[in-house]
Length: 197
Image (cartoon, rainbow, N blue to C red):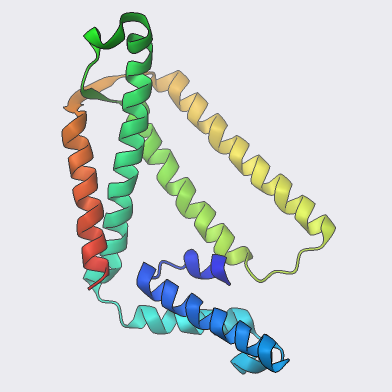
């Protein structure tokens, strides 16, 4: 239930509120010695969660729906930019120390490909995890899921390696890392503020 709610694109506040209600229901069911299905009034937990998610989402307007994506975009910009900045300057720092340290982020084909590959992969994984919730897995089913996940991960890694081999590191432009981080942090807080309204 937690995984389903976390991957359903609910606002963080709404997800926490619902999960707290579910936790209270579980504790009450345990205290009264009844099943959680009896406490919730249904044996179909997945549809119960779907209905709750739909009722929350029906109250969202366009701005509140976009705000979460703005927040995640800001977070993604900060993380990817910072990691790329560290990796771009790591060799120069080891060899020359701080004297040749650059505060510019190279926006090259490698960085662009990370955005173009990682974002869809994250969306696919979230959708996959949400759809696999509430499925009864046998031992054989767990092995099948493991190998499916492993094959998908290997395909993504191979796509990234092939992309880097054929595209290379074509430099498009350079940006000051501090400005990039400020933009990413600003997007995160703007999205967070809008999602809480």
